[in-house]
Image 1 (tube, helix red, strand yellow):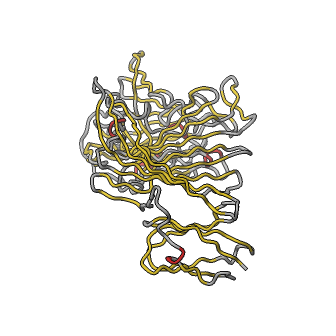
Image 2: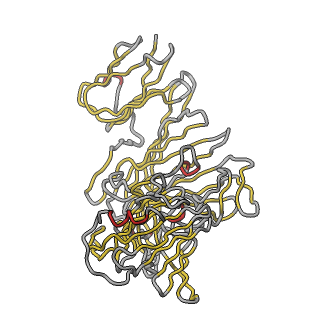
Amino acid sequence: MKKFFLFLFLNAFCLSVVASDYQVIIPSQDNFFHVVSSAGAPNNSWYNSLTWSPIKVASFDSSASIAGGTEYYSFHTWRDTSTLPGRLDCMYEKGPCWLGEKVFMLNNGSGYFYNSAGDTFHIQSNSALHDFWTFYHAADGSTVLALLDSMSWMQRDGVWDSVRCISLHAFDAAGFNDPNSPMERANILLSKSNGFFQVPAFRELPEAVFMLERRASITMPKINEIYDFNPGDEFEYEAMCANFFGQASSPGYTYYKILSKSYSANLDTVIYYRQKIAMTLSYNAVPVPHFDTIYFSGNDWVSYPVSGQLLFDTKPEENFYSLNPRNISTYSLSQDYNTYNNRPVYKTIKGFTGYSNTSNCYVVNHFEPVFYTTQYAPGLGEVFYEADLRNVASSDCRTSLIWYNKGGQVWGGFVSLTAGIPDALSESSINVSPNPVLDFCNLNFPNSFSGKIILSDLSGRILAEKNLNGNSVELDLREFSKGIYLLHVFGANGFLNKKIIKE
C-alpha cells in the first residue's frame, strides 16, 4: 500500500460530528432506493443490456444466529434475472438482489455483503473518524480500502440522521492507486438508525458501480385503493391492435359510468353497476371500401375485493421473478406521476417466454414470447392493458384510459359515442380541399372542432393520426403513393368517414 497515506490529504466532504455504532441492516422495515448514477460498465458488455427498475428495495424477512453475529436473508429479490452470466441467453432462477443473497452482521460491527460471483465486501459500522479497513480484496491482489472521512447530520427524503461518510479507494496489486477502477472515490453514506442513505449495488461490484440513494418510502397499493369508484364516476377507453408488420386497426372506444355501488352480505366485496357504451369500426370492402360502425349499449356488473389485500405480492425490485421454467412475472412503479393527472402508476408484466429448463438457468431454444402488461392507478383501476404476441403470426393489442371524470375532476380527451343515432358530423360540416390532392390538403370546419383525425388506406391500415382543436388542419400526403385513402374524423358530435384521392 505504497500510496495509502495519500488518504490523509483527502478533504472531508462532510462536517464532523460525534456518533456511536451505526445500524447497517434494518430488518423491521423496507428501505427504498433509486439509481442516481452508474460507472464502470464496459462498452458492449452485458451490464448495458440490463433493464433496471428505477426503484430498488432493501428488505429482510428472516434471519439466523451464527457464531458471533446474525445472518440476514432478503425477501424474494434473489430471483433477479439481472444477475446474468456472460451469456445473454441464460437467466438464473435464483440470482441475488442488489444487496446479495444474504448479509452477515457480526457483533464486532463488521458487515459482509456478496456480489453475484460470491466475492465479499466489508462495512465496518463502528469505526472511528479517519479509520480505514479493507473493503474488498481481489484474487489478483488488487484491493479497495474504505476510509471514514467524517460524520455529519444529513437528510434524505425527510429522514434526518447522523451519517458516517465513507469513501472507497482502489489500489492495484503493486499497491498503487488505481484511478481507473469503477470503485475509486465512490462514497457510501451510512446513517445511525436508518441504514444506508447512499450505497453502491453490491451485486455488480467490482466490475460496475451503480449508485443508489435512499428515497421516500413507497406505500404498496391495495386492491380497494386501486378500484375505488363512486356513483357518477365516468371513464373512457381507446383500444387498437397491430399485426406483425405494424399495420394497425381502427380504434374502438368504450365508455363506462358508475351507476351504483353496493357490498356483499359479508362486506368483503364491493359491487359496481355500470352503464356501458362501446363503439367499434369494422372494415367493409363492399359496395365500396368503408368502415361500418358497430354500437353496443347496455349495463353490466363488476366486483372487487374490499379487504386490505395488496395488489401485488412482491416489492418493486428488478426485472423478472421467474415463477416456473416457462413463465415470468414482474412488478414495477412508474416515477412519472403525470401520466394520469399526478397519480402514481403501478405496472405488471406476465407472460410465456418459450425458455426450456436446464439444471440452473433457462436457455433459449425457441423464442416466441407472449407478454401481458397491465398498468394500475389509484382510484382509476386498470389504466392500460397490452397483449403482445411476439411471433410471426403476432398481434399487439392495447387498451388505454383516455378520459375520466372522477368526483368532478376531469382529465384527458373525450370521444363522443352516440349509440343508435346517425352520424352528427355531416358531409357539409367538413370541407377537404383540394380533393383530389397532390401534396397537401386542408380540412376546414365551419366552427371550432375538437377531436381526432385518422388517415388509413383501403385495407384499414392506419397511416397517420392528428389531434385537432380549432377550425382547420393541414395533412401532408407527399410520402403516400397515388390512390384512394379514407379519412376518419372523430369529434364530440360524432364521427365521419370521408374519401381522399391522392394524385
